Length: 446
Image 1 (cartoon, rainbow, N blue to C red):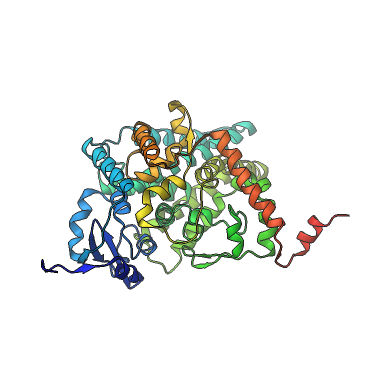
Image 2: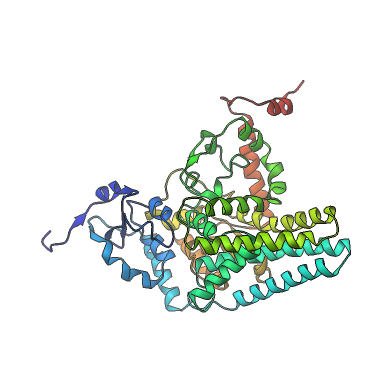
């Protein structure tokens, strides 16, 4: 080229799509981030998922303006055939308008009220266990502990997406306190999992939030034993998985009542693994604090019956939040393969479901009721999601894209129907996997 710049085609860009040889394009410029993955604050997986593509929309969604200054050191050339779709143009314009309005910097008082409610719930629950001998008070305290964990989950979710406190150090302290110390769930695990989910929303083989084998399958496509690029293993659809999936629409709510056990196991597994974990010492210390105070509190109850009751009450109540996580995505459109950077807006809207509710119920949903808006603008404080929803709805209408929304009860029905459909398909496959004895006993007729 006469201007002396190096121009790179989309085909050439697409060849650099693996670890150790990873290029991306942002706003017409190509960057070699092969050695950046290990230091990337969002982890290496988001880069690998979008490797060899234009990632402008994803970059704009997840990074503040200050991140642009660091790109030049990775620059290798210009993308020769760079094009911007009308959807992306409008999306980036909307991001720019929200920035000019200062919405990303105005966080409201959500964090203060949430932390205050957490302090009250914790104090009442602990005092009820220590100062009362009444069975029903202890049962209530177990439920309050579950509500504490729900609110802690919302504050952990917010602090992982944007800085909810006045500075990075106090924000980090809040993350460890709310996540690791109070709930026993590693914030490092949550970021690792959640970043992958946002980047590859509703990809059956890239999104960990749809990979719940052998208990759940939201699509019969999973019966092909796909490979999970998040867990780096095969999601084997064997006889055990078939049996469990065949009754998943019945087991969904019971399993949600104990789903927290899975989060405990995932957190501990990551912290004890060889995978790079930022601030591993802090993470482990925080989780250890939880496993000291919570069993100690439970041991203060007068007998084993009340101890089991307290734990089950706290798990069952916080199971509401696990159900909420599923409602936003289980019944939405799914696909196989890595996410496409050029279809960022489309993928986020197709793979998410909003929950319609009155503003006075926003505390209950923690921002997830505006899942479409949250996925498109993940750094936006949740206090603004209701305000921007009309703009997002109009943009979806303009480009003939879905803006999925349902009531809380309707979304539960949709989720169960999705699970039921896959369950019936699991029973009726023409090429069945070997059946185990339990399968034979349950499904033998006549």
